[in-house]
Image 1 (tube, rainbow, N blue to C red):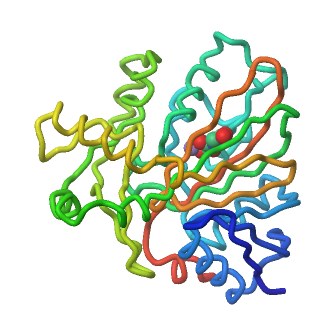
Image 2: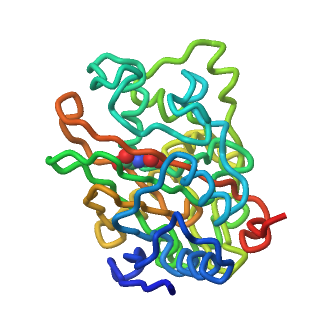
Length: 295
Ligand code: OGA
Ligand code: MN
């Protein structure tokens, strides 16, 4: 079977079919998915039913190494038994809805800030794959912002001024902006990482702004100047015409490129409606086509 793509937005994001991702072993088909990612940065697969193990196996086949140094692992162990499987649900270990004051809930509220996954680590995140297991009846959408068009639409003089800038990303920083508090020991384990403000996809040469609510400062600027610049750039990158809003259906499996997009969860009444999602994120190491070749 070959991959078919249908555009969801004028500049990025496509619906992908008709593949069952559990069965994809062919390097040719995997490469067509990577090419689709290079072109669209967000791919929406419908009606997928991957188990935990199948999601891990698919992510490894597609893109090589998995991200396990998650922020939530510092708070508590993944209820799925492998830190590569991030629980993006509003339910606790007993299966009940998280209460409004639950620490896990307060921590995950920061998903409502524009961010990229694992930018606070080195190596940073490359692809994220989020499986919708239980979708509420009320809207509980996710928005994606096209960071390549954000770069492309900057004035040339601004682009020149941004080249070479280095940004510190910290998950402790993004949580603190919402008043979430970490213990000293947790803070020690969340030191953050430094990445360029402008990234280039080595496979197609496309450039993108690499921003996130985790971006705490620009190393090459005084802290307030850097923070103001980061805010301006986020504002520029999240103009409505650069945003695709995804309304989830059960069985959706969405892959996004964290180098080329930001995303955020939209608010809903999360203490009243169950929403269960499971994410695997790969690391931005090597060339995916080569990394993912079986050993
Ligand atoms: C994520 C994330 C947003 C959402 O899984 O990384 O930010 O809407 N999810 O759940
Ligand atoms: Mn996220």
